[in-house]
Length: 98
Image (cartoon, rainbow, N blue to C red):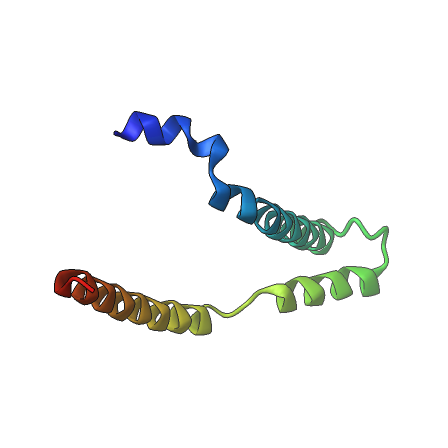
């Protein structure tokens, strides 16, 4: 029953175990996101107070913070194949009755 599962989410041992890693990754990504946005703002609006070196440095820093998408896409594709093969082997074991 789905309503039983929804009400038992706060008591989940798995969610309790992964709570702190998820919160730390979320905070880390949020800090980097705000830093990137701040550097882009400095570079685009020239808030640096007439200091061109600071504006150019912020633009270069923000540009090099971006991660190319091709490696991420290739890794996600490989992980999806591994997940499919793992699921298939688990189903085969279940079907055999091991």
